[in-house]
Image (cartoon, rainbow, N blue to C red; front, side):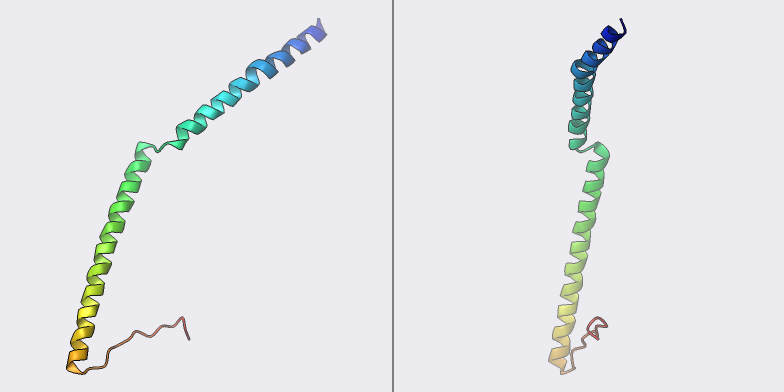
Length: 87
């Protein structure tokens, strides 16, 4: 009887429990592969922030270019920021 019980447990574990666990984790993996609503909201917020920063940078570059042109017309030397990285 003891050998029959061991054989039954071995067969059940090989043909029932292991495939069940495998399919369970495959379904968990597929569910996590898609974006959750919180993730979508976070990505949308990041995209909006990136667009706002891009607009700010473009405005700043335009202002600096305009200031550069004014200084050249007036004969003033153009100020260049000193970089401490090159020193």
